[in-house]
Length: 442
Image (cartoon, rainbow, N blue to C red; front, side, top):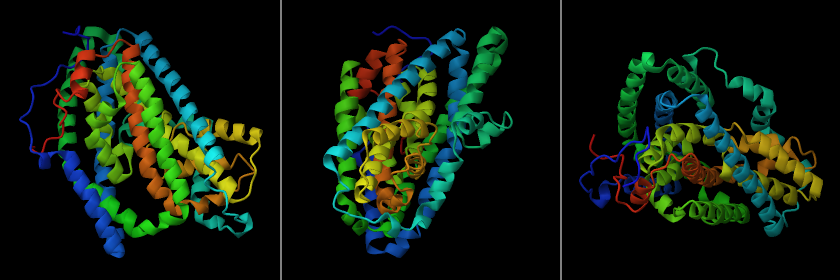
């Protein structure tokens, strides 16, 4: 038996084995296929179903702030001072910086080798900049100072209502430190947060029952609005991006996983419910609460999960990083712009900075790309209009890669902190733990 780790939850009793059609991933997969068929056969009707997907994502986002707050505050409250918190955050940011930078470089190398934009011969003067003006405007408003000051909420409670993950995390850390410093005097508050977490995760289970409806609506809208035929002219770019992201997950993250004693394939299988949901909704935030719970079930200590996952959703976007450098080189090649070595280095550095602080939601990658290109004058920002039609399809791959990357990061940081129950991890990835956290029975 693995040694008990303070703050570690134990595996709950196994639930009655469900029939195949009761599993969440099966229902979400059926919803995705149905959404594609509806969007393809009835484009106007499919496009009108957009509110179904948006409503589900809003439901999940509604519960994200409470999940992060109670998890992080209660977890830090159990810590022995701020030194342990600093250790976790320091190792987390070190991992994020290393792996995300590697993802940027991989995207750049693949773009130079495959050259998916060669042969387009687009005259930049013929591009319509109005199509991407709103993204460029949002990107222009972003700055490092603005980003850092935005982390501080206007009021204590506004952090829980703003929907900003980093603001919630900031306040939760302060509350956790306050609990840790107060000792026994704060025991009643600590117990309240522990009990509240059980209630909140039960709400998560209820909300997740609507996942198939959200996936159906989101997929029907995507296909109905943009059409599968829109991929045709840019198939080289879409195919290259999907292949590169898959290789990154299986090879780069796979090697990291193997080094730390687990299989990336088994981890993907363990998270299949959430991955199908991310694919269907094109948003990694849709599965954030369930990911936190599953990683805890897999032996990662609650406070580490509570710190790494929310932080990773802003600072560890591997899929988005691959997309940025690959899309930037595609636009340059399509417009006949020859990027020098210094231009490409500037591209990587700018992308490294602009990618930090982006939420894992649909469209964020496009905004970050606008911010990156605006600093590299040789590549026309208006060139983003070339990929606007297929960005929605690529956002799904970005979200999936970001999701897996943050799951791997949490296990690795837990291992560094000696906050990982190896037996629970092995059992979970082998299918011996109760991995069906979202039951069909309320």
